[in-house]
Image (cartoon, rainbow, N blue to C red; front, top):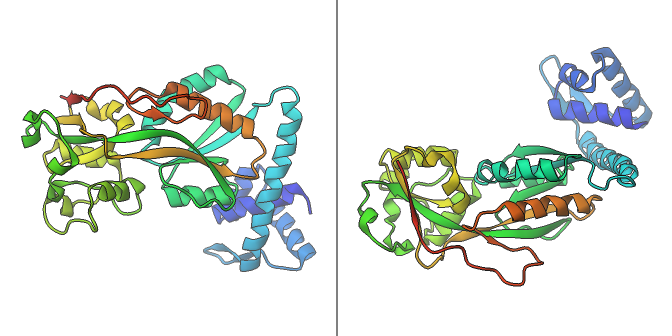
Length: 323
């Protein structure tokens, strides 16, 4: 058994296809298939069930794959450790983020990160919270940016910032002329939510004290898969929604027919945190990444870095009109 064989096994498990796995590993398919067959004979178990139409990993294969991922990560850590003798931040850093955060945070940090740490290669992915935590447990990513608490277990988390929710409503909405808007002013029947599985939908329901999704009203007819789609519905006059503060800086603010309002009392929001495995060997890289995030944040959110002696509230309430 060698690391090369484990890489072949991992590639097949992730692609569920020997041909695509061979392409990923830059070898011929017969070479890859032959090495996996030899490994199966050496171990005395079948790792994959092969048919003409599919490739499925066996139960024992799943267990072996978990160890293989850990071994490959530790092998990479050895290489990174050797490199760190010269540069502790060199190498790839695989970070995942939830869809309601990634499009608005990443444009703020990519250029500063590249300028400050050109030797760090950031690999980004965007998925729902459960998928990110599953990939984190399988050692497929190094850290996840999410907005829900996690059970301690094998994970550690660092709270990065508190992000308030803003109200987004059409320009011809009755609330347009109201000076200060609170959660109590929002008609739940017209509240548009993301589809189930998005933590933002659960958080909005929680702050609005909604036990279940509305079964009547305009908001009950739509279950959007992305925040961008929800905002398009708002701009078209189908209702209103709550958006994270960073999203107010997004491209949807141009000619969309939407007004974004900061809520009075600041009683609605979420905490964005970085989650990682306790065993991850390159904590310095995560600390450097988190520092860039904190430095790039606008004053519409509240930084939660441990070095801060106070947590200033963002600027005074305001509204932003989009087109």
